[in-house]
Amino acid sequence: MMEKLNYFFAVTVTSWLLALMIITAEFYSPFKDLLKAVFTHHWIGKIAILIVVFLLVGFLFKEKQSSEKTAYYSAVGSLAVILLFFVFKFLMG
Image 1 (cartoon, helix red, strand yellow):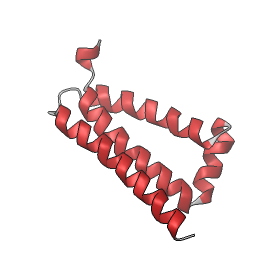
Image 2: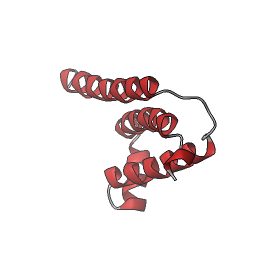
Image 3: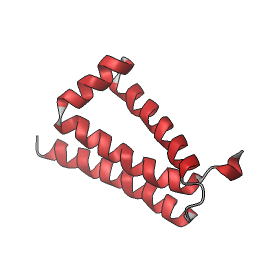
Image 4: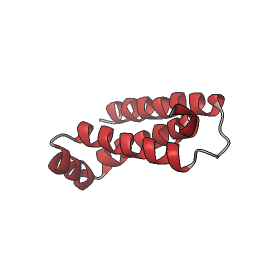
């Protein structure tokens, strides 16, 4: 089954989607409220969306060329963006 899943491309896409959803939820409260209303908590909503997107992207783009290096740098880069966002938000009050 795993050879039919483009794991690296799915990791790349979902890494950046997570960063986007976190930052969006912080700036646009109706998005966070929607996640809470549908999934009982905004983090549960983000996780559910990420799982669905991961599987869809992984299977729909199984033929797309992707690399482990790109997935790694995307995961680390998106985590850095999230960290920097919250540090900046904390420092700015």
